[in-house]
Length: 415
Image (cartoon, rainbow, N blue to C red):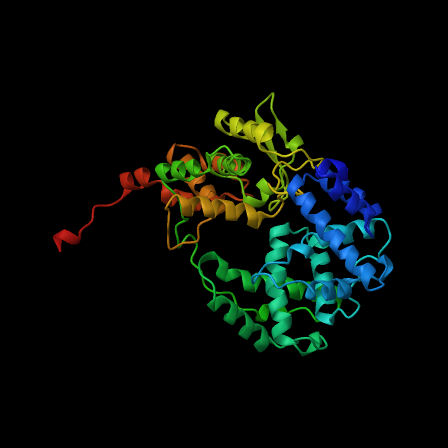
């Protein structure tokens, strides 16, 4: 494989005769299989050869290599600009990973000194997943808040649940609520109550303590969901029309968000087998509501997906629909990454707002357009995957034409 990476025979001979010559060919083959460009493979091979030369000069063998030894090697290299690795160290993690796969190095050591708080977080995460069946996004949000609660209450010391008082719970929740706005103000209360139910389930605290957790007052449908105009949606879509693999992928993602109103984590979970090209529908896997649904996609969405699959998606054994556009072409399974794609498209289109813009903005827009076009709330709820019609009711406030027909005359001018 090395012969295919370098044109000069002298370079090939030098690498093959080096201390790691017998390992570089397997390294180059592995990188090529993962889709790395030839320039990247050559850079990694040169860095690995220099590392092998350094090991031989100091009398080290592969069995001596660990993170400390790699850091010692890096300190001997010329210091690069801030925030960048030296060229001779770039890609060494590929070599170390190959050696671990070949059992030449021990696997990454597991942290043996894991704090008691971290152990409780692992148990709580398992409870949310296996007992409650919470979606990934819900588990992530709850764990983030519970992590801050454990840090504030116990730090790195011993976790003593019996010492948690109602006042401590109230103070923490109020502090969290003060940093939030809108619907997010209820999340700290819900997360802490979930933690207390887990502790009751585990026998750590007695039932009833969850009643001490305050709930911030929030009027139902007090705010309007942030939505875009038709013209703004089209402007955002035109930011991803360059034809590059990244643009093809992002254009398909934005169309799924804008035309079908799917959630970010639902886009991230899509796999190739979720699309039925003959009948023209896409399957949305169970998520927040634990219900699978099937949505028809319009010609525009199908064309964008086909263009990405034919001209933008790199060859890979992964069955996930959307992938990162740089090697090793990992599946794009992070909902936050999907939302960032939406946010960047809106910013490039010059769309700014005091509200937080992201993937959910397209979802609100799709829902309001369906309502304004005469769709029933039951139809909108089925498309969006709402478990209750009460969740869909907020979009009634966006049907401005229907509201104008029933609005009472304003008497202010007569006063």
